[in-house]
Structure formats: C-alpha cells, structure tokens
Length: 479
Ligand SMILES: Cc1cc2nc3c(=O)[nH]c(=O)nc-3n(C[C@H](O)[C@H](O)[C@H](O)COP(=O)(O)OP(=O)(O)OC[C@H]3O[C@@H](n4cnc5c(N)ncnc54)[C@H](O)[C@@H]3O)c2cc1C
Image (tube, rainbow, N blue to C red; front, side):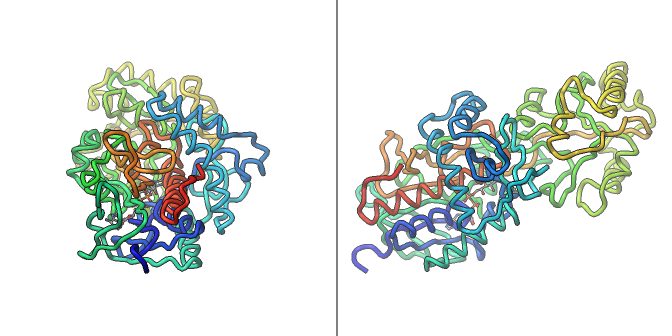
C-alpha cells in the first residue's frame, strides 16, 4: 500500500456501516470495517427491518402512486419543518433507490399488503396517507444477512471484536482511525457506530426526557449503542444535531422487553387520562402516540377487564394473564371488582370513568369508534374482529408511559453527502457519518415505523459513495 492503508475505513457493522462499506466497494474503494462486538448487526439486526420509502417497485406492484416529493412534504410537515429541507429532500429521494438496491442484492419484499411490521410486504408505517412501510422477509436480521453476503462478495475485510478508539486527525482532516492502539490510515472514514441508548451518561446529556420513565425505563437498542460517535466529536470540533430527540415507545410500567418477547396488551383496552376520559386511538402509530401521551402529562391508565386478561396470548414475558395477576396481587396494577371501585383507586372521577367505559362499550365493540377512529387503524392492521366490551370484573388499571428506549437521534451533524459538519458549518475533510451516528434526518417525530432503518441504510449508502469518491480521487460527488 502507498500512504493509505485503505481508501475507506467504516466504523460499525450495523445497517449503516454495512451499506456504506458495500457501496464504497461498488465505487472502486478498498474498504475495511471495524465492529466492536463479536458479531455484525447492531440494532439493525434486532429490528423488524421496517423501511419507509416512496415510489418503490413494491408500491407500484400494488398499484400505489407515490413519490419522493409527497414523502418529503409529509416528513417535513410531521416534523414541523424543524429539519433541514435540503438534507430531508435527499433522504426522501434516495430512500426508494436504496430499497431497490437492497432488493437487487437479494432482500425479499413481496408486493402484498401486510398488516404489521412482522408480515413481509407493504404496511401502514405511521400516519402517512400513502402506505410506505416496507417489511422485508426475515426482518432486520435478513437485511444484515443480505448486506453481509454482498460485503463478502466484494472481499471487504471485517475486523470483529475491535472497538475503534479514536479518529486519526491531522491538520483538521480525518486521515484514519486508531484501533487496538494501532493507527490505520485511510482516504476517508465513515462513522456508523449507532446511537448512545446504552450509555446512561449520554442519555442524561443528549436525551434526558427518557429518564422521565424512572424505574420503568428499559433499553432495547443493541449493546454496542454506546455513543462512540459523540466521543469522536471533539477531535474534529464536530457540530451535533438532534439533541433531545429519540424514540421512546409507550409501554405498560412492568414491560421489560420489546414486544416480540414481551407480548402485546389486550386489544380490548382503553387509555384513560387523569380526568378518567379516553384521549387517543390506543393503536395509534408511535409516530404520534408518544407525543399524545407526553401532552397528557407523560403517562395514562390502560384499563381492561377480566376477559381481556384471560384472553392474553400465552408464552410472552410481560403481557400474560399470570403476570397481570402477579402485578395486581402486589398492588402495582390496580384491580377492583367494580368500575366505580377502580375509579376510586385510580383517583379519577367515578362518574367520568363510568361514562367513558359506557361510551366505549356502545361503539367500538360494535364496529366503530367515532371519537378516535380506531376502527380504521385496526382495519389497516388486518384486524377483522371487533374488540370486546369492558364488562366483566374484576377490572384492571395500569400505568402506561413512554418507557422503551429504542434509538437515539443526537449525533454528528451531516449534510446531503453524509459529510460531517464542524461547529462552523464547514465539512470536516475525510469524515462521513450515517445511521444513528449521523444526525439530521431523524427528527422529533418518528416518520414511521421504518424511519430509522431507512435512515441507516440510505444515508449509509450515501456516506459510502461519498467516501469512496473522495478517497479514490473523484471529487464530483454524485448527490
Ligand atoms: C428492537 C428494535 C426494533 C427496531 N425496529 C425498527 C424497525 O423495524 N424499523 C426502523 O426503521 N427502525 C427500527 N429500529 C431502530 C433501528 O433498528 C436503528 O435505529 C438502526 O438500525 C440503526 O442502525 P445503525 O447502523 O446506525 O446502528 P446499529 O445497527 O446499531 O450498528 C452500529 C454498530 O456499530 C458498532 N460500534 C459501536 N461503536 C463502535 C466502535 N467504536 N468501533 C466499532 N464498532 C462500533 C455497534 O456494536 C453496532 O454493531 C429498531 C430498533 C430496535 C432496538
């Protein structure tokens, strides 16, 4: 080798890192990828792999007319135009081609309607009017397998179990990395080290709202989500974006696992606020559900009856009939023989809770929810059986609150080429970032399901191409 050991070094072997590495190799670069853990995959491999994109072959296969322009408008409106339009425009334009690239590599997404993030096909991701949630076969694990196969085909070297310690910086330019105390020189470096959900200090500093969950807080992000991108920032005076933003999912206070393990709350349930009133579609997408609960003071009651408890599917860690009984025996979940007694325990007005349940019983169990239109959400999820009335004691109430920390959005500010910006708004020579490490695409409102995987793979692909073009000497960036 000449003065560089590799054209491109990629830090992190999740979705963003693998997409960057493969794309850099496709653009003629020699690439090496470091992964801190013993296996590739990160949070991407744990995910459902749900991917939001517009104007795709999957949508066309279902006769759905969509475009990057519509996606862009929805994305910006949902985020109240607090994100940089130029960056979001690029993301929305490139998400579709990135999905097609994945399909060409071998990812299977059938052109059929899917009721949820676990059935391959196209589902309603969030609150979009045109469905954009692409669910791949074998989910996030499948995405990683396909990308890893492409990685092997290109002969890209992977160094597992090796956590990059620092960036190698000379004259304010990034010229490589330090790993295992050894300096490795490169034409460009892509930081794809994921988020910081597993580092409580960074959560305190950059996403403190997560701590409002108190003892109920639990983190499902991958073990490697330790915020190393934030540790790298000072060495290049990097600008940070996305502070205070991330994805917390509403869960019952006793839940400790993502729903694949924890199970699901009963369909025949309502959410009730401190006044004893229903206030939302209980099945609303987490694009908006966390925000709605936050607006009601940060928590609410989930109310259901004995039938609902007994009908919980067996075999799950948290949402099981036995677990609810245990929590009730311990007094942590409220239980009462009558609704009036339950209202007393909840400290909500008795007459209001009675009226709330009566209105529920008169409507959605008979097919329609005129207040919150939950019947539409249930139908879009493929549901064909109406929920039951809340009628058989004992009755239950438990706290729900945003407590499941999935991903974090604060990271190294990037531009449309995934180039990292410094605090003066200039690009840092030689440095690119993507996924949770590269900030600016994931905003206050999560546009999906499917926002974060789309971000990781789309911006990872852009980062890989930009890094390769710079490293192999072609400055005419494609995007
Ligand atoms: C349970 C779960 C379900 C989810 N479901 C979805 C979904 O369906 N759709 C969606 O859009 N989003 C989903 N998300 C979020 C989404 O998966 C992530 O935001 C996204 O995959 C992050 O990709 P990434 O490449 O940035 O990070 P990761 O996939 O986490 O990869 C980062 C990698 O970098 C490694 N690393 C860290 N530091 C270093 C270092 N210093 N040196 C070397 N390696 C390092 C880590 O070990 C890790 O392997 C889900 C998340 C979870 C946890």
